[in-house]
Length: 312
Ligand code: CO
Image (tube, rainbow, N blue to C red; front, side, top):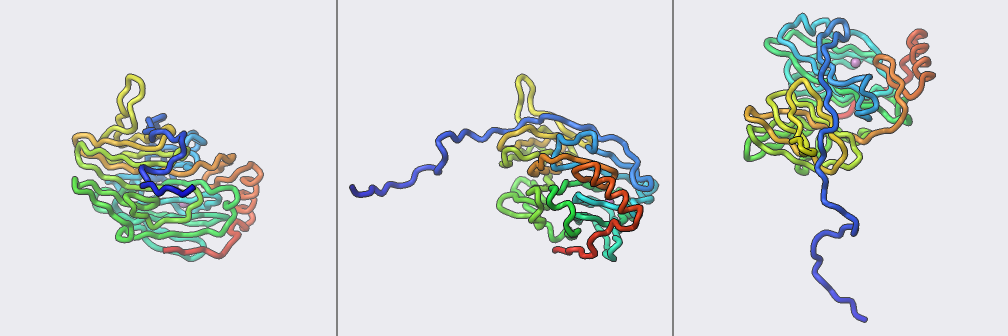
């Protein structure tokens, strides 16, 4: 029997493949006024009380003020272990310095993706800014197997972050993950994150695929819009600054900008499904590991590795 050569029609898909399902907003979190560090006034969008809803994300702070008294006290020397901290400066500058001698400034549009691993002591001090100082700090959990690895820094300058512009005026900054086949510079992060800063003009619609099973949230910070598909008799969820929107499961996210346009962070990551033991800036898997960290701090043995990997 000879083999017939046929043109391939359509994509090869498993027979049980179904149409991509857009995600609906499952939960929303209102930011809480919080005093952090040595007295920085900020909005905690989510944190300890939301664990594990946002797994692998632990905390999101939105700092922003035109009054230097709200931020100049900064975040003096403090430890981190077991997590990654991601600082995105929207406007203004923050000086940082760590116990291993690294120092620098995170400027407007810059991102610092810091993996604390087994331990680092650092300080983060916002500098006096004309007008508004603002930005975000996201905490990303590390899997158990990597919590005690060497610390690593990724310092990204604003001009090293790809900007994808659409013909309608939309602007997408790709910090991690991919947008329209453009990859962000932050790669090889254990939870496979996407971190996008999306600006849409009035009325624009934005849609993208997301892996099923991943945690996805949107953080609007300018303008307003609607997020996710309609559910039952309810339309898509309205979202505006001051609230974080967590999507339920599905294959796509859909967003529509309101009349004043919309700017939001879109963040996704693979959940770890591991126990979370949290003590301030240290997040491990068990109480014993937290006690060990506290003993290390008391004894001056907190820094396990002098090696800091500097990437990018
Ligand atoms: Co810190």
